[in-house]
Length: 312
Image 1 (cartoon, rainbow, N blue to C red):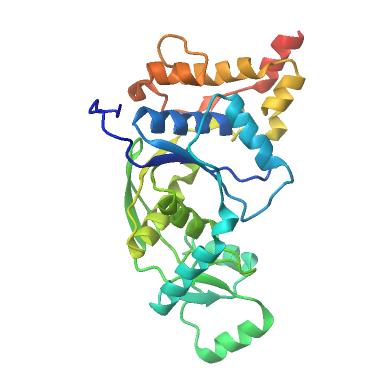
Image 2: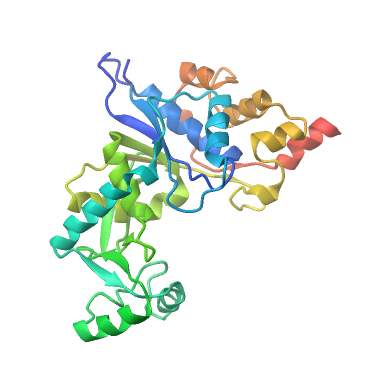
């Protein structure tokens, strides 16, 4: 049944899309649980995508899928390997290029950082250095460095509507579509692959909210529907920083080695959602899901206290 009680067939899909650069930690699993619960609770299907266009650690994807299953999540169909879609990504860049909406960029990361740190530079935004190069300048720069391909953005900012954050207006710069190694860039691939998988609800960490206006603008240019975005708070360590491996036992494997069984770790993740009835499993979450009471602030976690309680 859908969230409005009509009993209609599932509409669209939610998703979780980890990068196989390492094992999932408690914060990743909590975001995945929220994505799964909000999709299932609204009558959507739930799909997975392995975003393997960048750094890949051998065996990480297999372990990530196993940990998601141990958390109690299920998904529809086989997980999509993003790298299998590279030809489709490049075809879209060719279409944008034919429409005059791309250009080659020869800037290094150091040059971009320097421009952004200038008095009138926009933090994190590409300043358009290569946007209007003439043929002679372009030939000179092409001789020394393989170019990336950037979008020739048609706006400077865009407003998106986030289900939890409300209206959000952010900068839109000339984002990279193809990296200088020829591989599709994240902002291109995520927009195209969400559309390909029928994703109309994107639940992810709120650190990604600033990138959403760029993705919305690209979707608009391609005639693709914008999904519903739900940016959820991260899990932080006691110092207020994003939870990471340096904070101790934060993966299911590490917690298990420290004496915290996976079932207990999952129960603590579930408890952090503040739902009524003291749910302990993912299925319990669906039974009592109330989006209005889900926390809108970060969960501050000290995994060392978890393990200390076990070993003390």
